[in-house]
Length: 46
Image (cartoon, rainbow, N blue to C red; front, side):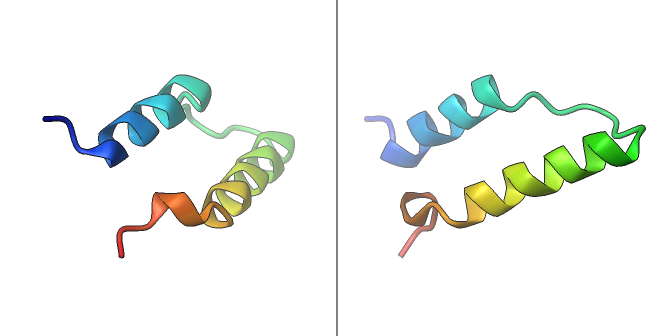
């Protein structure tokens, strides 16, 4: 049986591909993505 967080993590990986941040604009975008992810309560194991 697959843990439900595995599917959430897979979905995140498909939406947000990791990459090297080279510019201030890319940095700002990445910070916004992280802030969005941190606001998702279903991402935390309780």
